[in-house]
Length: 304
Image 1 (cartoon, rainbow, N blue to C red):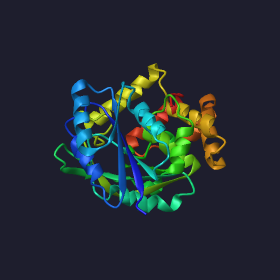
Image 2 (image 1 turned 45 degrees about the vertical axis):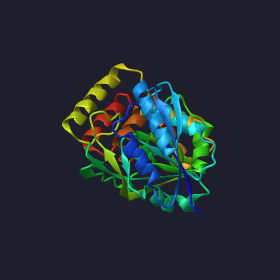
Image 3 (image 1 turned 135 degrees about the vertical axis):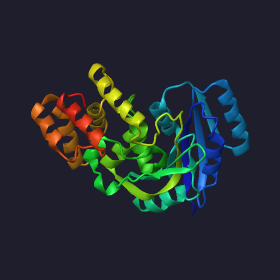
Image 4 (image 1 turned 60 degrees about the vertical axis):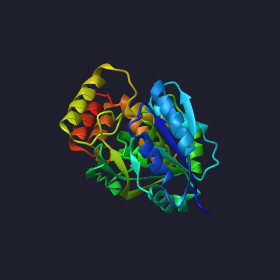
């Protein structure tokens, strides 16, 4: 039986690349694809473009106000009714290789009895789709503690099954650090994440990317320092807050080992000695050297 996929795409004024992405989604082989696009407060020209593309490619279109990337994707997930086998997240400006969804299916199909999520590496490309580099995430090095402090699931590669969709939809918080990070935390804590070291997405890097960027450029480190300094004077959601929400929403279904990790991570906000423990722990660490230095210092000063 051919697997059915529902692809969820959040769109915001991305007219330069959206048709190429839609075409690549419908060019997937060995799967049935249903596409839902939500316009997150796009301007009238982009809304008109989406209606034009809808008549050409036959997808579901939702036009709503701007609520941001996290809320837009969670809104999309909340609208699906579990009639599909699998769900996939899509950015508006990438290009999918034809085996993207089928490769995910082959990796995730044996985990139908638990919440399961698939993720892979990507090829970073420029605006003309020339390959700049290949992501080299070694997923075997990551564990749940790492996921509490850093997201290692690239959202545009994410595919999850019906059980995962159900538990994600059971409680949707108003805020989380990012939709793909939140989804990865839920599935890791209650089921299984399957990683593929191959790539099936051309992950386009350009000036208007909302999140995506080829890592470790000078501008990347400038933003890293700016965000680090910003943390001293703001009350925005932090990694410890996100972990606290995860515990509050899903403590009854989380594996006890993972629940103990969350308890330590959250309770360290009230104990300097526990923060020292996390500071020296290799498990509660980020992959990049400079990222990790900044983050470890934030732990010590209780700004994590």
